[in-house]
Image (cartoon, rainbow, N blue to C red; front, side, top):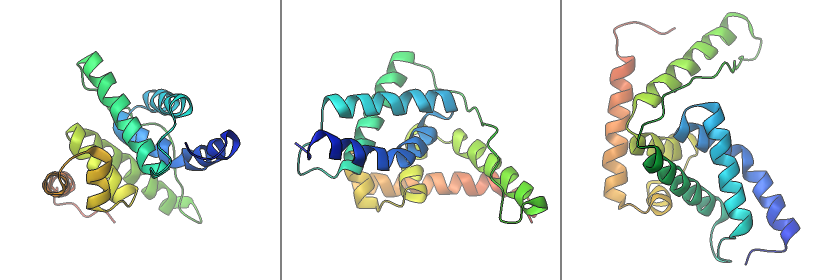
Length: 167
């Protein structure tokens, strides 16, 4: 079992922003992502990871499994619900507005990806995991990770290759 209760809870709290970001990439809608994060934390608090497990990887695996269970129960893909969060670039103004529009475009494009591709893209491109680590988290062969990531990148490139300059 991981450290005492207080230390374990502090470790979970420190990883909460990464968990919420991962949940958002899985669920799409902010309220669904928050529900998924809550379910993941509840599960981790009631059933702690093995002592030798990497807590972050374990957390993502538990989250992914809860999400898959929910998706199977609903039998309907969740619709993308881009939130109204605005991220402003330093200095704000026109640059800040451009960043906000770009973020919404990327979120919309990611939401169009098949679920597994979106999960892999999130773990590799957003969370910074290696192919091997992503394969471990998702329980898939590394070759599958590489091919699905390649297809996801190609789909995103095609989505943004509309002949317009985005500057």
